[in-house]
Image 1 (cartoon, rainbow, N blue to C red):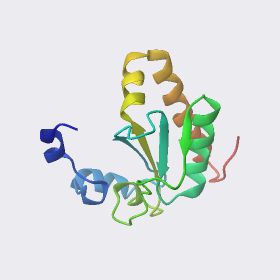
Image 2: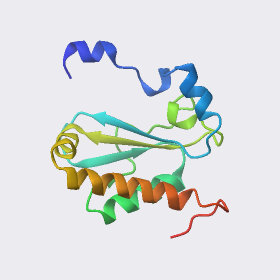
Image 3: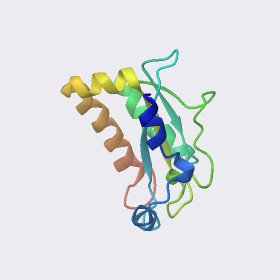
Length: 136
């Protein structure tokens, strides 16, 4: 990340934009999409957050769409109570850390971006079923 970008970066636990926090306080399902460095893994979406069921649903849908995910043993667990993703009504959410190389592909391959977005949307829709239960 260029040094100027690093200066502008706000960590998830330090995000305090009041209108965003006010909106989150009215939502039971919260998903945050972040970018990360490739490091030694340029294609895997690291899953984090405190909502294990939502994380599993999103990871499963992404895998069905052909994307790799990793739910633990990575540096972005997203479990801090102050993390923006865990500040909705339920106090838990799902965080997706998308590697730089995959973000570049998503930006340049519209069909791939559509697959990614639809997988996440379907997971959220399934998870947020009207009766509160997860349905497939």
